[in-house]
Length: 515
Image (cartoon, one colour):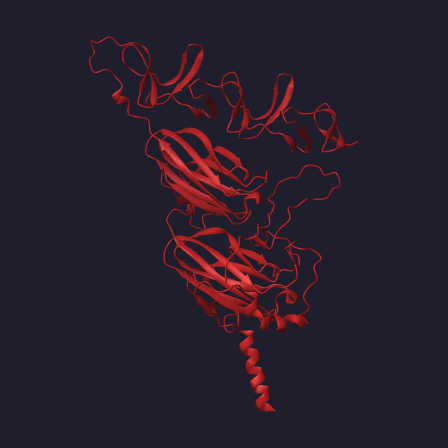
């Protein structure tokens, strides 16, 4: 009898360690809301986007629910009595293996000190026999690049979270605070955990942490760290301007928003005064919610000044130019701040820099030769030349329009901060006034050219312009009250039907409530 029991025990142990391979298109990550105020709701309930089989979040940013996956709500949970059968059929549940596979030791790697060493781009198998069976893995990256995690598991008919996959950076003391995590439910059997994450060379830890006993016990899994060496991806963590990533001019840089609190800081240096355009692209997402906010700062001693430029980016548009900005020589910081709409999305950008030609090429070489006063073109730039051959700089009035010429004498176009105020110079160099649609947003430039912000009365109507100057539409909460700005931007008053509900607004525009 003892011999029979011994044989049975050996069989069960071998079966318990058999397991898993790779890839489908990953499910979309759960959007984690930022500190944004929602407009009034007819029923008082908050509305959140649905999530698929994979969710991504940062430490403390996800509500503590028993399950964060909303796939097939109400599906029957797998009874624990089925666990042994599922584990015995593990190999039938997985697709055929297409790459190197290593069977990981399921004991002894319960904390990072005993983590199982991993090779990149190699599949490692494991299984969760009990709810307390935590598995740690350790991977060493030889150089800067980006990584993603591929995860597979046996199928189980439940919407409860089975595992939480956590990523840590190795340190001399052990490991850093958790960078981010992905919640996995076993109804989906294969996924790539988005987004790609830019990393520097060094040691990283992956923790496969069981999350719900009925969902996870007895399941087998496979995990793989995909790695690509590259120097044009951001290096996490770059969440502060003091550890910002250097960006070469006129070269594309790639990054990602892996949580709604992810801030990516970059820095670049202009060797001389010139025009900068930032071309920004991102993964597509059918949403009008803000995905990223881009801010540009001038570096100063001990930090940075106030934002010179700010732009909100929605993911339904995948590529845009953020306009020509004239900047003086020096160091600059750029912050890309991820909002809930950008979680799980990759992005890329290029700082396109154009330096004006030196002014020494412009004066005539023969003093006795008559010089005509007026506009002259040198290469791609326009200059205004006086009759003595010198070049105009600063503000210039000509033919009823105002122009601005830089310290080299080159005519400026696009946005320009002059004396603490923002101006917009049309493509022909003339100063813009009144309403102007720039990059898909409306701005109001006063008669003297300065960009307006805050409340504005124009043409007998009130408008609200954001801190970046862009006109606001829809519901807005400001100064302790709700307002509604129509599609044309004008503030509404009186009785208004909005989204099928009748509302009343005072003459001041303040919302009274539903009628």
